[in-house]
Length: 93
Image (cartoon, rainbow, N blue to C red; front, side):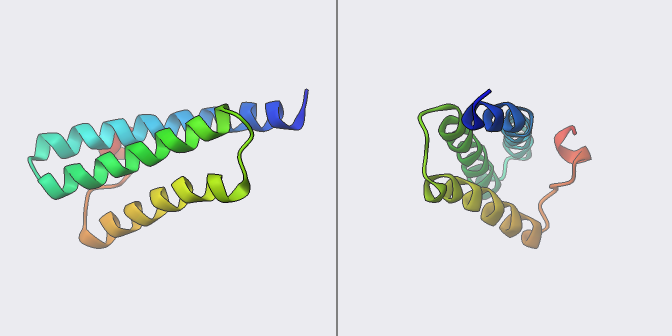
């Protein structure tokens, strides 16, 4: 198995988990009726989708992979600072 295929296989579960968690958090944000929370949840979900697309797609540079990953981390940190419910239990993990 090539390194690229091995890395994709290794990252498949975590990437799919990030996308699923982003979807669940977005559903919770929409249910809360908070527009700013919905916007941030959409950004988190979209960054997870971009990251997964880059890993599954054509070979990407390290920089290309870091951008959506940094978005995921940054928006998550901002939400935690604001007191948003980002615990594993709150998003169904």
